[in-house]
Image 1 (spheres, one colour):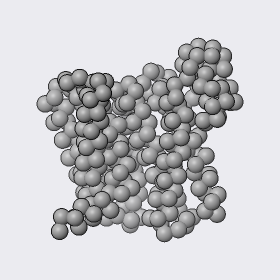
Image 2 (cartoon, rainbow, N blue to C red):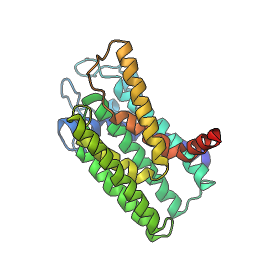
Image 3 (cartoon, helix red, strand yellow):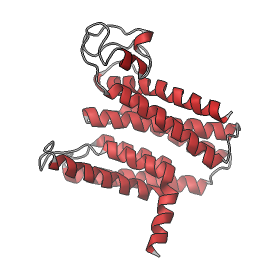
Image 4 (cartoon, rainbow, N blue to C red):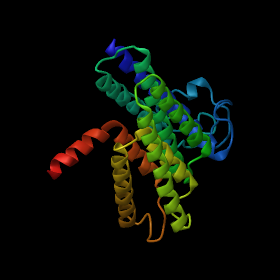
Length: 269
C-alpha cells in the first residue's frame, strides 16, 4: 500500500512538473494554461505524446527537438525531476503528520492541498527565476484556494476562528511589509508580484513558522547575491529576483518550521 502510494506520487509529480513547465511559459508569454497543444519553443511544431514523456523524452531525444533538432533547455527535465521529488517528500511529510497513510477525507484533502501549494511555489520559482515575473494568473487563484482551505478547516473544527484570524493577520502583515519594501525601493528590487506572493505565503504558513520562511528566504537570497557577485554574473546595483528564495523559505517553513523554531529556542537557552 505504502509503496504503491509512493510510486504514484512520484509519477504524478513528474507529470505535474511537465504541466508546470507549460504553466510557467504561457503565464508569462501568453496562451491558455489549461488548453492547447504543447509546441517546440523554436519551430512551434506541435509535439506528440511521445515527445512529452517526463524526463525520458528529453533523454531519448538527446535534449533536441525531434523536428527542428534545436536544443531544448535542460530546465524542462530539471523541473520535472524537482516536481517528482517534491511530491515524494510531500507524501513523506503527509505520512509523518497523519501518523500513517490513513485514507480519510480530511487526510486526503490535506495531501491535495500540500501538492497544490508545492506546485504553485515551483511554478512561481520558475517564472521569477527565468523571466523576473510572478504572474497574477498563478498567485491570485492560489490565494483563493488557500483561503478556501482555511475556511474549510474552521468549518470542520480543525482550527478555530481565532486561528484563521491570526493567519489572515500574518498574511496582511507580510503583504504590508513587502509593499513598504516595494515603495521605498522604487520597484527596483521588488514588485507587486512579490507583495501578492508574500500574502500567499503568510496565509498558508501562518504564525510562527512564517519567521522561518522569511529568515531562510532572505538568507538564501543574500547568499546567492554574494555568490553571483563573486563569480561575475552580477554587479553592484544589479537586482536579483527575490521570488525564488521566498518560495524556498516558504517550503522550508511549511515542512520544517516548528522543528527549526524549536531547535533555535533550545540553542538559545
